[in-house]
Length: 246
Ligand code: G3P
Ligand code: MG
Image (cartoon, rainbow, N blue to C red; front, side, top):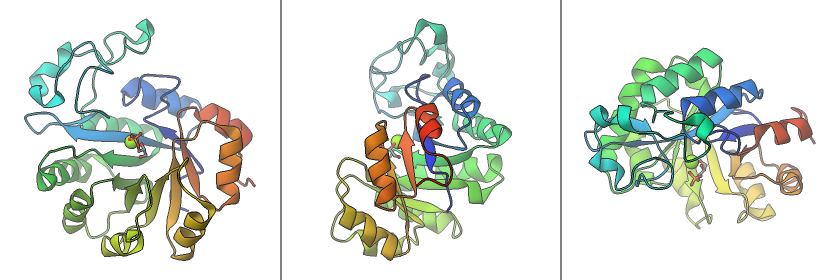
């Protein structure tokens, strides 16, 4: 297995502001071995952690993310929306997030949010940062819903561990994943079926499902052969599903 059975979603999104350095530290403090983070680009091409292409939901500002450049980051607070405890938590540059994960010994699933960005550009910007700031290729999975971005990434790095993200599993999933030489399929935990899970495992892919915060659902997913779950609440899942469960 590449990742761990319990993967902190956006860090530990129930316990600390998502996609922040505070969230990464929180996940590690809870004993999480792998986390998932979302990366996208600011208007000047700076790769940052952010799930949305708008600032409104998770910051003290509003409007499109790509109106910002690197120089705007110091005035952005992506913590206080979650809780005043995290006021002035910065939006992390990808390089800082990579360095922190490495220093904490975390494995990382970096999900590339392409939105309407140039897929070649976003793949290249992410690749350039990873080339400099990440030392352990076996502890990194690059994933995206966007097959074009993944295809560009594959051409930049023949050895990258790539995961393909789906909400509904399309008919062509296997051909798409094989064309990308993907190692894993990442599916919506509420939409996947037992048959989907068997098919994915029978074709030799690892299977990770998002976003599971419910113990009964997690138990069912593991029974179906799911390798790991993304959860906003890593301590709850770690308490209930130790490494060898079921
Ligand atoms: O990478 C798994 C999961 O994070 C995908 O959905 O919307 O939470 O980024 P989302
Ligand atoms: Mg994500």
